[in-house]
Image (tube, rainbow, N blue to C red; front, side, top):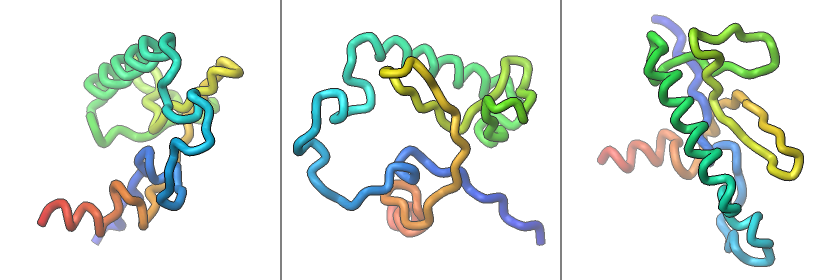
Length: 117
């Protein structure tokens, strides 16, 4: 048998917190990932670029996750990152590649199994 490829983590795998009121004692820009009006066009433009890059990759949705650290060459349209995380305060973006969390509240095997039943 071939070893199973490790799953990439979803957004919630990397934002592990205990269930609580996420709006309590937080400023407006901490309550949501896209709260500033100018970020909506940036986020939608990145989503379009990622979708086009995935459509041009031979592996489509199973494309290899790449980072912008210089270790990956990328395809015809550049790298296909696993995630894009931005910091508007520094006008910077990072493209982390992270593994799945086996107890994720969104994509863990237990949650997905219950959804399928």
